[in-house]
Amino acid sequence: MLLKRITYLTFGMILAAVSARGQTGRSAYDFLTVPTSSHVFGLGGTNITIIDDDVTLAEQNPALLGPEVEKQLAASYMHYLGSANFAGIRYGQSAGEHSAWSGAIRYLNYGEIQGFEADGSPTGSFTPSDFVFEGTYSHDFTSRLRGGINLKMIYSSYEQYSAFAMAADVGINYYDDVHDMSLSVVFKNMGGQIKRFDSSYDRLPFDIQLGWMQSLGSSPFSLSITAQNLTRWHLHYYEHTEDGGVQEKTLKSTFAGDFFRHLIFGAQYQPSERVYVDLAYNYKMRSDMSAYQRNFFSGFSLGLGIKTRTFSVGAAYAMPHKSASTLLINLGLQISELL
Image 1: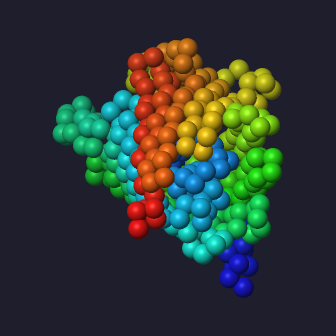
Image 2: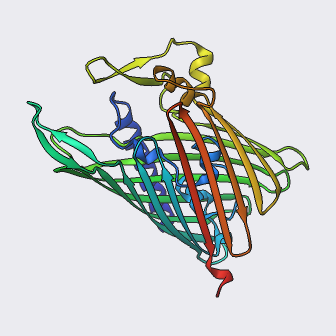
Image 3: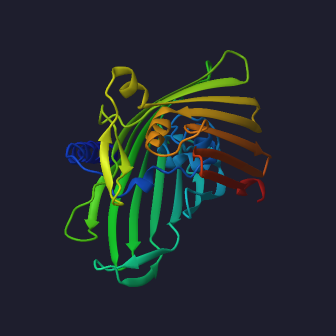
């Protein structure tokens, strides 16, 4: 009975989210697409198929959380573009042989900004910030099929304005351990704004994502392809106007261009369970930077991870703009090994 109720609720949220996303407009909650996992960031910023006992992967796909995490604590820090800094902490543990749960807090700080009235008179500085509180649950339906749900409460504070929203992610992962193949589908950021900043309603960045990851035979190499933004075929980008505003534009529409802007390609070298190196290419990121001063590395990302029995560390780096780079660092602690 409980499973049936959860199923009905999930499909209801999916329908509501699809309906809301069908309207035009830009989301005010795009920070929800910023990853907290360095492993994910190294594979292009979005990846829903990584198979690892890493509790931070639950943020991308709740079905990647499982009892293999045992009792694990992880912290993340990202120096984002400009003066933005993001930090988070997540704890997860098994709940029997076939389930697991986790809780997380994310804090996003965009640095000090000078405020002005409409007539140009200064109002002082302020620091806009966002908080995200998450709770995740996953369950193994079979030895290869796992599902999960991630519930999020989002609080935003921008000078004298504040807003509150709620969202949910629902994901399914199929993992064939014989052929080391992982397939996933995730419905991200289903929900809406409960308290508005002002009279206008801001939508959440609802997305449907598909993912595939496959090792190359018995070699230590794996390939991954992640499809994102599947609710829209034509993806817009934004550029600054001469008067300091922002306008929405569409790249020259070609089938190949639209197709590849939805895909992220990743490659992983993992000689053992304790070490990995990632490299990825995100064509959408590179084409988005065409309106700015992109460089050769725009769209590429690189990640590295090292793990011991009790401790893990990961780092990922990207340079989407020639004057700005992004670094994400993860630290993990296997508490069950210390008890």
